Each structure stands twice: as structure tokens, then as C-alpha cells.
Image 1 (tube, rainbow, N blue to C red):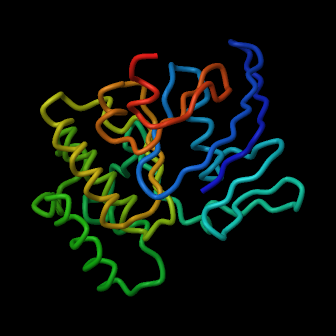
Image 2 (image 1 turned 180 degrees about the vertical axis):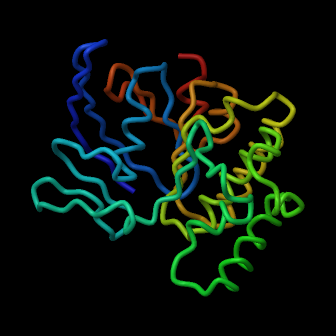
Length: 227
């Protein structure tokens, strides 16, 4: 996928912020790395269609999601993006199975249920299928969020600091599961973090953002190794 966008944001608290990023992400996990406020989440929201850039283009394979010159701005529903939010964003009134099935389109109820249970089994959470989010652990909620993102047959998966709220032991297992999920579906994953260990463990490539601009790109060993 290719991202080349500009976006100016205004805030009463922090004044203006200008995002100006350009990078490519091939199959594998690309890390968006940088401090809070560097533009990582805004970049993800632009890819997903939640935020509309002022200028530029976003494409995944042959599919153009956004092109300001051509007047293209594909709707969120048509972008085939799996999104894992930092706070999970699970529907509290739906069971785990119903949350996972929510993003599955164009199937009968029976096939949607079968697909939801299949993907939950891959993440080893089929035993919580009938539970509601309030009755799950943080790790279980995170796995449900990951399963929901994967169940929709996405062309790209966006993960916004997905492990920030889980303990160290759970985090280690989830990192393995994220890497395994990417290897199964073989689509680009864009993973936001400011955790160096996560970036080194998962990343095929790293894009370092600072104050809305790309400061460095490369493999983890190049970016985080001795200069």
C-alpha cells in the first residue's frame, strides 16, 4: 500500500497541527513509531476513511481509497479495512460472537456465525463466545477486537497501540498471535506503537513519525540499531 497525504488540524487546546506523511507498506507488519501527538493515529484514521486528508493519495494494491486530484474518496464501508482501536471499541450489548460477526457482510446468519466461530477458534477465544465484554479479561477483549478485524476479510489491518492496556504476560502471547494472523492472511498490517520492543519483535519495516512528518524509515535493526 502507498500513503502520501497532507492534513491540517485545528484545536482550541493545542493550536494547529500539520500532518505530512509519505510511505509505502508491503506485505508484512509496518510499524508507525513515534511519541504521542506525532500523527500516528491521524494517519490510521485517514487510511480507514474516518479522517479525510486535504491533499494526496492512499492506495492498497490496485484499489485507490483516496486521491484528491482525481476526486476519489472511497467510503469507509467499501475500503475493506480491519481496525483494532486502542480501547477495543467492542459493542457492550453484543456477545463476543456477535461482536466478531458484526463486520462480516454478504453472508447468511448461519454462515456469519460459522465464520465468527472459526476466526475465534484461531485466536483461542471460542470458549467466551457467549460472554459480553464486561465479563471478559483485557486479553480476551483484545483477542475479540483482533478477531473482529480479521473476520471481515480485510485488504489492510490497522492496529492502534492494541496492547497498551494488557499486562506484560498477556502482551507477549498477543504479539505472537498478531504475527501469526498476518502470516495467514498475508495483507499489510499497520501497527502503531511507541514501544521499541514491540516494534523490533513485529516489524518488517518501521516508519518513524515526529510532529506530523516522517523522520526515518527502514528495517527495525536499521532504525533502532547503533547509528
